[in-house]
Amino acid sequence: QAGRVAAWTAMIAKSAQVTVMTAGTDTVIPTLTFRKINGTSTTVIGTANLGTQAAGYTTNVLFTNSTFAQGDVFVAVKGADATAVFGGGVEWLIVPGANVTV
Image 1 (cartoon, rainbow, N blue to C red):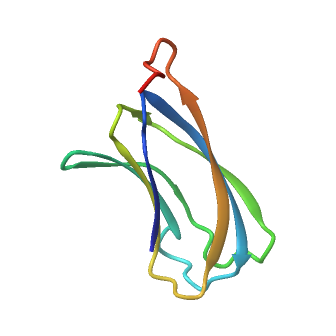
Image 2: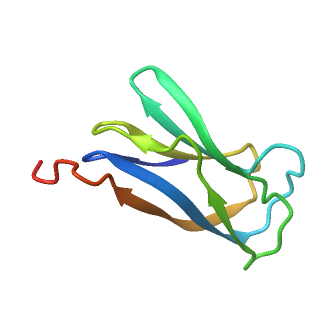
């Protein structure tokens, strides 16, 4: 399962605040992977390994290479852990001078 959003103008994804709602069991693979999709190119901009953290644990993930052009897609992908459940939000910055009348 994945959460996704398309950039409606030039934007920068700064960070994500993630809270564990139900603890998982995966200790090896990052439980959440944050990606930028531009056409056929996919770039990982951040990961969070939250597999065995207790419910209520909250962390902040800082993104790298996270400037989005209009139409690029941000995706948060949960790993293979079927037990884990997360909640969260993403901090966005509109690039100064970007077209905001689309």
